[in-house]
Length: 257
Ligand code: 5RP
Image (cartoon, rainbow, N blue to C red; front, side):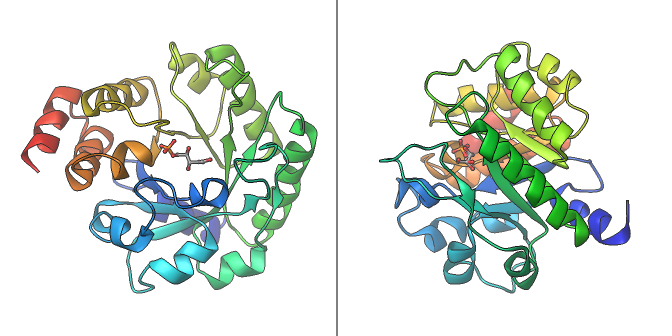
């Protein structure tokens, strides 16, 4: 692996722990001004210093994030349909030149395995990897899960493995029972998405389980920024990811914030 690729990956995955706390705030790219992100700058401002890497679109990075921030960014570069359309109908919406201009440490896009446009999203991933590798930029593949797909090891294992086979440097997926089987079948690091807002203790338990079962961190959004104590929640998640805290210990951190 050459210098640029390693350097960028070390801005996403903390070299001391090999893990990452990514804060996902890209939801508006298809959901619009979703709860907690109506004023993205205001939401992110107190969280950014507890974050290893922000997962964000170029528009929000440009308009809502201080360029002086030491936190790295991974750019969401796919999009197209809104929540009113066919979600799998995504294409690449941001060029590699733009990712370099914004000093992105990574680029990310969704693949829709089993959905209407699975083949196009997977071949788009291949093209993105070809281009990003030329500049030493790691690609994050996100396994989007349609309503009709099961969040189980069989489906998520399939989607994560395909992402790695096509060349993603890391993969984001959801937690499921026997998550370790998904990790076993995927030779690149997996970060866990949080999914819909659930009670804090449940989200922390899910994080603890994912880390114990081999996840290399999280790329979590709603369970942090929609919490009643977003700073407490991100500190709690950090304690699990980087310090191996239990969900109970992490809940204490959240409660005291
Ligand atoms: C949306 C995404 C989000 O970044 C991902 O789902 C993580 O956010 P959350 O924890 O809220 O699920 O990729 O398509």
